[in-house]
Amino acid sequence: MIVLVAAVLALGAYWYFLGQHQVKKTLVKGTNTNPVSYTDKDFMTELKKRYPKVYSHLDVSGEQSHYIIPGLEQTQAIVHSGQSKGQLAISKDMDPQGMAVIENKYILVSAYSKSKKYNSVLWLIDKKTGKYIKTLALDDIDHVGAITYDEEHHRLWVATIDKAGDAQVEALNLATIENYDLNKSKKAIAFDYSTDLSGIKLTSYMTYHKGTLYVGYFDKNSNGTLAAFPMDDKGSLQANGDKPNEVAPSKTWPTYDRIQGISFYEDKILLSQSYGAQNSKLFIFDNKLDDPSFDLDKGDAIASMTLPPYLEQIIGRNDKVYLLFESASHKYRNNKSIFHMDHVIKIKIEDLYKK
Image (cartoon, rainbow, N blue to C red; front, top):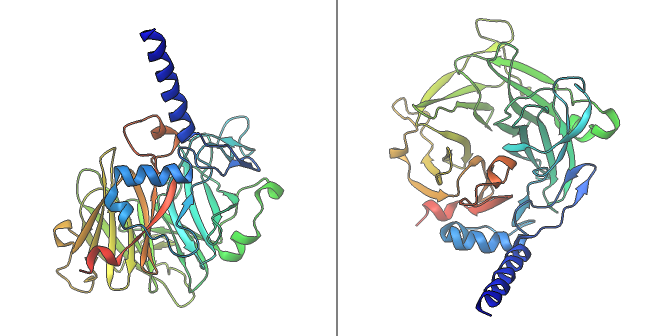
């Protein structure tokens, strides 16, 4: 009798747990649009339980309080190599890395294939409704760890690497993004602009601010580097490096290690720090980049917040900061000890440093 009762209770607990976290799979042209780990309600419940301070700072105003990250279960992508190279197929191992807000119309998330069997992708999401719009397939297996949008020139910048393995940035005009249809073309989207970067080893994170691309190099063991690349009036980077089509930075700054993202908000600089399964950090600095003695050492931060692991790109915008995590990707979903952030969230930024 005792064994029977225990079995019933265990089965009931199993079905309760399953019911709490069971999410119906929804596909749009081969890309899943459902959250892969939690329903919206369960996501908020779990966030409140595990990170109450983060939950208390959530910004739930405006169009959407959070955004489902599509494509984490499966997505359309182009095969990178082998007999099927160049063909449109389904990838089940995409890992989200970068994020941009475009014209107050779209949220765009970049992702790469962990197995490198598929080329990287960009997912376009309606900012007002939160609905997935389409997938943009890229032409290589770049990490795409940084993307940023220039609203003045209507251009998305994407961090890539050139054939020699050096830092590079490429750009897509808004019209190119909006006109592209993967299911019609069956081909990768063609970049409108490309240039190599000198003075920085790789493009790990990036943001656009007042006519300048700020590009950073991530290092897990030692200090990193942030470099400034000013643009001309047309929103282009002018070649001034030692090689053709190469741009040298106008200035560089040392940063501390494990930086994953950067953004500007009013007179502040935001940096995200994350590596491995430990909690991430968001740091806020006064913007003193014009001060020759200024560096982005965390000891100079005026405020900080502890966040879930695997924080990637951040965007400071309109009194809030958007946060993208990679913890709900296929690789990390098997780790039951961490919170799988399958939604982009927003927190009220001024609450962190205005007392």
